[in-house]
Amino acid sequence: MSSLPTAPGFPPLRLRRYAGFWLTDRTLKFLGASHARFSPRPTDVLLVSFPKTGTTWLKALAFSAHLPSTGADHPLHRNNPHDLVGFLELAGEDDDGLIYEGIPSPRLLAAHLPYSLLPHGITDGSGGRIVYVCRDPKDTLFSFWHFHEKTTATLQRMADDGGASSAMPTFEEAFELFCKGQSMAGPQWRHALEYWEASRLSPDQVLFLRYEDMLRDPEGSLRKMAVFMGCPFSPEEEETGVVRDIVELCSLGMLKGLEVNRSGRTMLGLKNEAFFRNGTVGDWSSCMTPAMAARLDGIVAEALEGSMLFFLKEKVDHVLPYAFKTGRSLSDQ
Ligand code: PAP
Image (cartoon, rainbow, N blue to C red; front, side, top):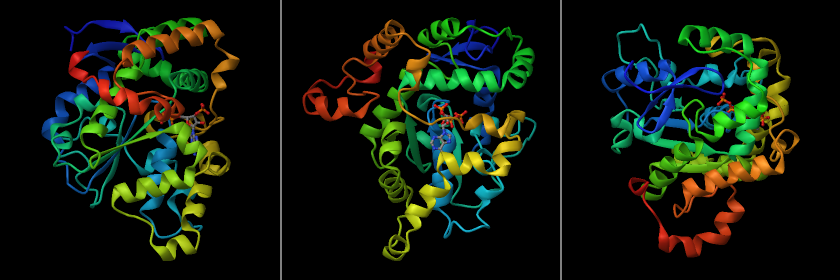
């Protein structure tokens, strides 16, 4: 690890560049151990995202899709979604045994890891299915900015452990770092591109979702996820409104208002409330000038050129029939 290039990131943690991504020491330590300590199962479902792109919501929906009802005894009434679906890379460092081996099948797990750095057993086709969610990078950065403001003390502790500067950056400084890809698991566009390519090569193994589409059609997105995860809703469940009930229970307004999410803490000691804010599209415009937005869009467009991946789907619908002919593989980058 000590031989890898290091740089400050946003949030202000020391990051190291490995295999094209900027990663924290904690993630790098996990990578060293994970291949031997994680034993994938064909029934596993892994929820993957770049941070701040819809992870918490995806966890709540996927978890609920596996349960028969949304009544008062539903675990979301007493637990933050992050406490119900654990991150691979946060699995107990000191535990010598296999990671998450105690969870009965079908297991629901999560990761912020790039596709190319997942344990091999997951990506070689023998380790279950992956649901990936992506989000417009401008909104991702803006969401990160607010999360950072709400969790400064915890992030400072993490920064101290990692030897990084814990000084509060300005939004402009955070923007510069994000544009250079220097954020946890960044660059975001490379992260999304790997999963996009994997979803095109193996649509049965990787489902690629967009946060913006989920906001537009939460019920349709949930149905799609449930079919993909192997737990489609039955006609009886459809008739009794289970899909609508799950969407309601997992809505931002509902989760944000629950006592557990207003007061408790979750992984790494982070406040539950920090994971719930506005959940809208285009919020970035209150902090980013049009010139900044155009610059970030340009960086993303250049990185994705020829790949057929666009963060906003309207573009996909428009361009896909033509772009399909010019698909470029990740290995060309
Ligand atoms: P994480 O990667 O640290 O887990 P993640 O959940 O991916 O964070 O991102 C948080 C964003 O999801 C927040 O977006 P915002 O800052 O733009 O508002 C948060 O509000 C949003 N979010 C959390 N829960 C939900 C939900 N149930 N429905 C819609 N959006 C949600």
